[in-house]
Image 1: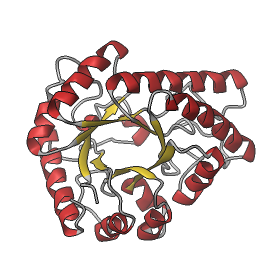
Image 2: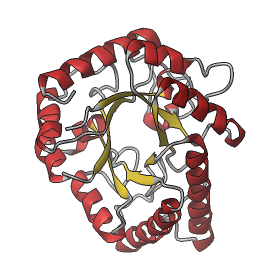
Image 3: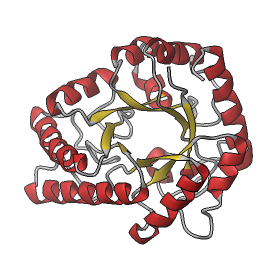
Image 4: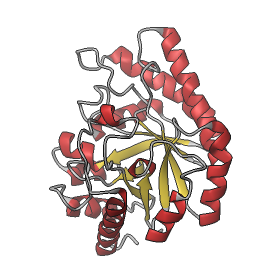
Length: 287
């Protein structure tokens, strides 16, 4: 079994990567992280090569988040808006390729924070499937895979559970489309985290290890033994990454409802998160 890599999201440190803060890669490498989730949406295209060069020098694996922003609505009733969302995602795919990112994940099946006041319709489901299938086929040319991240009911109404997400994966039916599961969202929406994770065996491309309050893993009430036992039982061998937020300065703070400091500082969050994840990986022989 391959070693599971430990990752961290750039949002622990900054909303936007640039030449002034790219040394954060050195910092996380020094702590012991193997990977970073970068915000594809906020990273400038002309800076992508520098990000890639830095990551390759340090042997850091990069994955890319890029949830659909307001105005890019892949399940809109307006065909033009759906087309614009698909073209936007294709641009993100090109940027990911330029950056050396092989995994593009997030709320890419609907726009976070956009609601209709009702649950998802079959028509909206088909819009998402059609659009994502087009993006997936386009992404194959660039060696990029897509990850659907089911998120809690307060952030979107299309995919909240693993069961919902597996249905969409089946409908898309492309080998380069999988799931990103996040323990924070699962803690809200799933009745049994162990069963939910194992039900998606072979289809989980990325995993976010987040506490119930989105603070430092291991400091709340997430059933971590169930989580890591499930990852062990499905032979998960990719990245587990912490996606937490120190304060409300990040550009998506209002979407994810971060109104207070969730850790003393970025240093404490990153060091303690790495320590906890490493202990759990060792406990379940995932490293």
